[in-house]
Length: 131
Image (tube, rainbow, N blue to C red; front, side):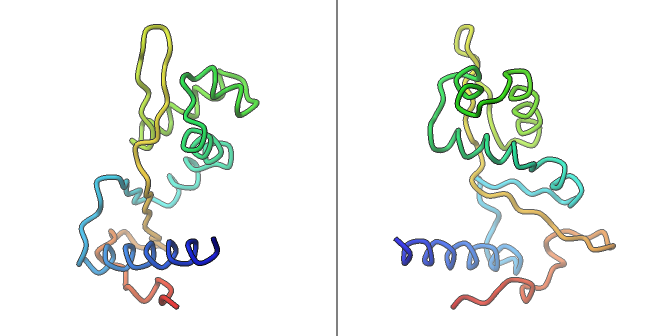
């Protein structure tokens, strides 16, 4: 299991390095958030938990997701709407139910550090070298 995780991390680093270098196009299952402040406010621990639950448990409704996360439906709905705005999740109506699904598997964000530039301006040396 540990070898699988290490291989996955190496693959993710290679993907990110290729995207930063411009040798790999951003995948369709990725979303880019160019403002670190948006990332900080968007990806809260509770929202990350919702994403994990959706990926692992595949709830059939927001009500079920609310039960699984042990959170109020109103709070879950608010967080899902924020994630939907950034195209990270989709909310599909099926009769009276709303079914949440994770749309993006990769979230990239730029570290501006006081400058306004996109991913193409970042050196690949900012990524760790594969072991």
